[in-house]
Length: 329
Image (cartoon, rainbow, N blue to C red; front, side, top):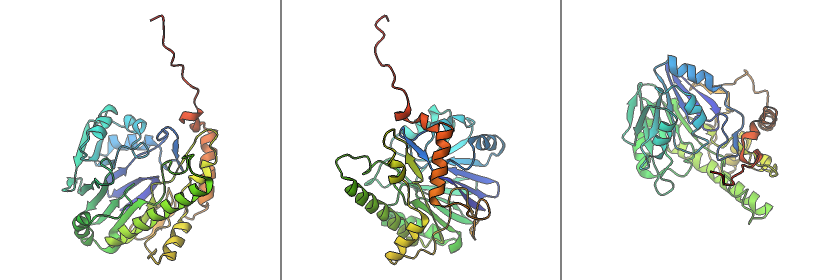
């Protein structure tokens, strides 16, 4: 059993031949400009082949935001691939999957759905968002994973009352919690009504709040391990290159130092970057050792995107389209 960090909010959860992929995002710019830093560790071709040959391969998507729901990736998958999504009031995510050609779609809610030996539950915090969901994946006799994605806010009591017993069934080392600790949107960095100093202050305040709240949620269920994810991305906007630095996520050193500052137990924070995996005992580094640091991952990713012209797929790097009407028609 292991959890492999792929990129952003995408991980691969393996329990023998049961393999679950969360929130796939490969090449398509999210919201027209955001790219994952670094790129996904595995190429989609592997998942396309896996979906055809392993009937226990599953994709679970937390919500319909582009950095969690890559239409091009999903359109390339075999139509019979099983995709699980939370049961939202809006039919939008399901219809979007159908447009991608996916036919085997299963919806689940807080009551849970059993699939390939795991119980999937989703929780929607309606006072925050109607189209996002906190998800738990419970392999009843083995381990449990909390896929928090963008839900970093304090977990409500009614949710804790449901998931605490689920977590308590497992040994502490088999309780794995993942949650957003970094920004992945434009506020306040692209808002021109703030000064540079105000933007830096507000951005730091937001990120610090995400980190602290996310880790407190993990402690609330007495998790044995915590993955800092969902935010390893950068907007590529022409003539706004300062965002390559200003919008980049915080390092693990920053996360740990912040928790120490506020006397929050940081012993559960895993030293993981995309490519690393956790076997519910220790972290296994992609290359055996960590040969690169936080900034080197960013620089290498930017250089790669420029070299292979991926940034040309972003909106502001494309040539404007002629929208004049065809008068002859």
